Length: 310
Ligand code: GLN
Image 1 (tube, rainbow, N blue to C red):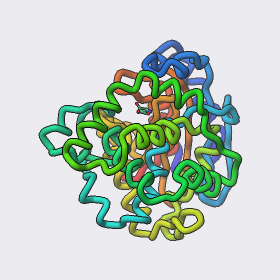
Image 2: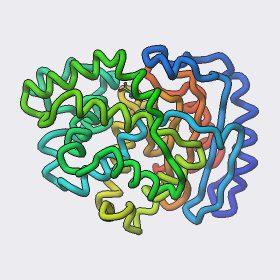
Image 3: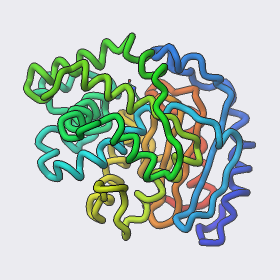
Image 4: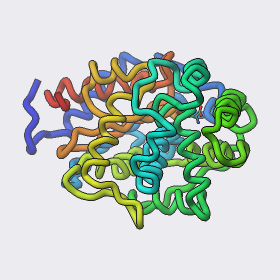
């Protein structure tokens, strides 16, 4: 083990991780519930680490685009927090759910108020907020994401359509919240926006770039009119740590020790505030819907560098 210093040779650490992950070949499954994602080559693997100063280290398929899926929930929340500020927390909580990302059980007995903005029900409420508050939600959200990454990010309409064609559980969650008065707009319209936001495609490099600024808590972060204050940025990190991996959030904090967010496209992004942001992509998922190899890669990273938030 080596100590974390500004002189850390992260490039060498990423190479070691890629070699050690060979043992992990064949673990996990690509998600079959979204037909388009089931077609992705499971053997792809990429990783990118960028320091807050902007020095970048990459390995493998770090420049290949993938579906960011639930990682987009952090970006939509950034805009919603800017607009509604503390009023947002009347419609969605900030507690870990301890349940799978698409679970409906708590939603009924907790009166249609999702536990947090990163489970599907919570993200659908955030999508409802953006549909109400933005004049052109699809265009404005995309412009925000392009602004914070500085890259030509696009939606993948085919992935969005594919998910919509089988989105029975998300439809159920949305109607449950509509019935309980926590969804203002038409369910179809909200879900169309939600599927599109999840279909955003990025590379590991773009993802690390997009999230790097969440780690620079001393600086305001955002794009256009949507800028997080320092306190809001700290709270986003708290939410990523406690809720970013659904019912595996405790495990991620225990094994990796960084705030982060995963998506069923197989990517994970995580950050060590004031030091670096790291992204990893490997499509096969574990039983909780998080990238099997990605979880292991990040555990190796914080073990080898000796640095986590704790
Ligand atoms: N779009 C996916 C869904 O709603 C996102 C899930 C995820 O990435 N965990 O099921």
